[in-house]
Image (cartoon, rainbow, N blue to C red; front, side):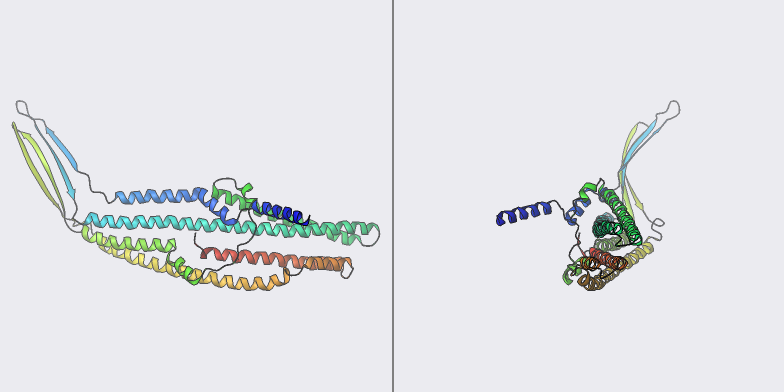
Length: 390
C-alpha cells in the first residue's frame, strides 16, 4: 500500500512539474515571435540589398537625334550607344567595400537580436521576482488572518484588547495593499513581454517555472570567446574593414575613367558609321574624398577600441557585482532560509513569551529580510545575463 501511495505521489509530482515551462524555453519562444526582431532582420536585409546594388556596373546610354531640314532638303537623323566605365579595379574595390558593409549590417541585426534576448530574459527575471514576492507576502497575510480570528475570539473573552485587534486590521490592510501593488507591477511586466512577443502572453506566463537560474559563471575561456565574438565588436570590425576598403576605393576613383560607343548617322543621303572614345578626368568630383576616407578609417579604429574596452569593462563589472551579491546572499540565506523564523515567532506569541506588537515587529523584520534576499538573487541573475551567449 505504501508503494502504491508513493508511486501515485511521484506521478502527481511529475505531472505538476510538467505543467511548468522553464524561463529559457519561454524566452526562446518570445524571441522567435518578436516583431521587433523580425523588423530588425528585415531592415538589415533591405540595407544589405541596397549596398550590393551600389557595386553594379553603369547602364549603357542610348541616344538619338532627328533634325528637320528646310524645304527641298533631306532631313538628318542619327543614333548611338555609349558606355562609360571607371578605371579598371574600381568595381572590384567597390564590391569589396560593399561586402564589408553587408557584414556590418548583418552583425548590427545580430546585435539587436542579442539586446532583445537580454531584455526578454530581464523581463522574465522581473516576473519571477514579483511572483515570489507575492507568494511570500500572501503567506504572511494568511498567518495574519489566522491570528486575527484568534484575537477576535480572545477579545470577546476579555483576553486581549481592541488595540491589538486594530493593529492586526492595519497590518492586514497594509499586506493586502502590498500584494495589490506587486500584482500591478507583474501585470505591467506581462504587458511588456506581450509587446515583445507580439501576442498576449498572460496564459503562457502562468505556466512559467518561477525559479531564478543557478549562478553558474562562465569559464575564463568562455568569457574570452564571448568578448571576441560579441556582435557589437564584430560589427565594429566589419565597419573598420569597410572604411579601409573605402580608402582604397577612393584612391582608385581618382584615376581617369573611359567611355566608348557606336554611332550611326544619316545625312545628305549617306549613312555614316563610327565609334566614340572619351576620357573622364576626376578633377573636382574626388576633391576631399581622400581626407574623408582617412578620417573614416580613424573613426572606425576608435569605435572598435571603444567597443572592446566597453566589453571588457562590462564583463569585469558584472563578475565583480555577482561575486559581491553572492557573498550577501550566502550570509542572509543562512539566517532566513535555514530556520523557520515565522513558526518560531508564532510559537513564542502563542506561549505568550512575546506580545502581539513584538510579534508583528519581528515578523515584519523577517519579511523585509526575505524580500531583500529575493531582490539580491534577482540582481545577481540580472548581472549574469550579459555574460551569456544568445
